[in-house]
Image 1: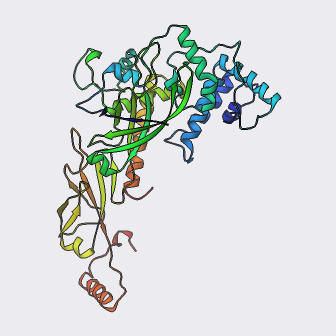
Image 2: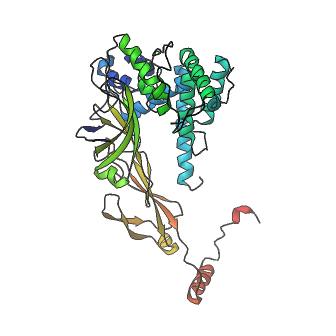
Image 3: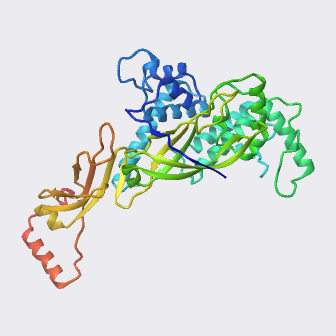
Amino acid sequence: MVNFTLTTATAISASQPLAASELAHAVGADTAWVVQLVEVGILQIETAETQPERWQFSSEDLQHALEVRRLERDFGVGLDAAALILDLEHEVRRLKALLQAHGLR
Amino acid sequence: MEFKDYYSALGVDRTASDDEVRKAYRKLARKYHPDVSKEADAEQRMRDINEAKDVLGDKEKRVAYDALADRVARGGHPEGGFQPPPGWDQGFEFHRGPRQGPADHADFSEFFSSLFGEAERRDAARQNYKARGEDHHAAIEIALEDALNGAEREITLRAQTVDAQGHPQWQNRTLSVKIPPGVHPGQFIRLAGQGMPGHGGEPPGDLYLEVRIAPHKLYRVEERDLYMTLPVTPTEAALGTQVQVPTPTGGVVEVTVPRNARNGLKLRLKGRGLAGKTPGDLYLLLDIALPPADSDDARKAYEQLAQATASFHPRQHLGV
C-alpha cells in the first residue's frame, strides 16, 4: 500500500471554476463537445462571453456533463434528448426530496 | 480473481448478435439507472453491465474473450482462482475507440484490467500516443460538520497504476485529503495529479471527488439549505414563544415562534445554511408534540381546553 499526503485540494466553486478544456478533460471529451452542450442549453454561460477559452464552469456543470456522457454511452441519445432527460431527472429528484421533507418517503 | 461471465451479466447467449447485446445492455442500463432503480446494489450492477458491454460490444475484445473462455472451459478453473494464461491475447489486437480510454475503465474489475489494460496501453504506445492522463472520479462522504468547518480525511482508492515495465496493475492508494471549509453536496474537490498516469511522458490527470454529506441526526441537507424539525408544545404553538435552537456551526440562536403557528410551519434563518456565493438557509419545520394525557392533571387540562374551544370544529369541512 502506498500513502500520499496531499496539499493540493481545491473545491470547484465560483472562485475556482473549471475552464472549458478542463471540463472536457474531466469527462473524457473535447472542447467542441462542451461547446455543443452550451449550444443546446445543458450548460449555461453566465456572461455573454463568446470565446469558449474564457468560459467558466461550476461543480454543477461538471455533474451535468458527466450525466450527459453517461446517457450518451448507455443509450446513445442525442444532446437534445439528453437535455430533456436531464431536466426530467432533476425534476424527479426535486419531487423526491419534497416528499422526503414531508415524511412521505 | 474470478473469471467473469460477461454473457450472463447481460443475460444473453454466446450466439447473441451485436444488436441483441446492445438491446440487452440498454434494457439493464434502464433497470439499474440510479433515479429509477430500487435495487440496493444498483451501482455495482451498473458497473458490471458496463464492463460486459465494453467487451461484448467490441468485436476485437469479444473474439479474444470468447477464445479465452473456451480455453478456460477446457482447462477448468485452476487452484487459487483465475489468472489469464501468459500470451492469452496473442494474435488479437485491441484499439482505443473514440472517447474511450482508461478513465472509462477505471471502475472496471481486476479481471478486465488483467485482460485488456495492458493491451490498451500497448496499442497507445504503438501509436506514439501522447496525452495527459485521464481524470478519475470518485465520491467522498463527510459529516456535515466537516463540510462546514473543513477537515482532513483519509480515503482509500483502488486505482490503476503502471509498474516499472510499463504494465498496468491495480493498487490501493490511501490519500490524506484536506477538505476545504464550506463545501456542499454535489460539489467536486479536485486533487491535482492524482488521476490516471499520462501517456508518452505527459503528466497524470486529476482526481475529482464528489462531496456527499452523511445523514445527520438533526439536520437534513438539500443543496445549500439545511432543514431541522423543531418540536414545540401545543401551548407554545398557540401562544407563541421564544425557543433556543442549535446551529450547525456549534452556536445557539433564539428563534421566535409566532402565535397560532400551525404544524409544519417553516421558519427560515437566512444565511445559516452551507456557505457559498449565495449562502444557504437553515429552515426549521415546526412539529407540534402533544403532551400525553397520562395523569389526572393532564386529562383535566385537556378537558378544560375542550370546553374553552368548544366552537372549534377541525372536521367541519367533512360535512358530517
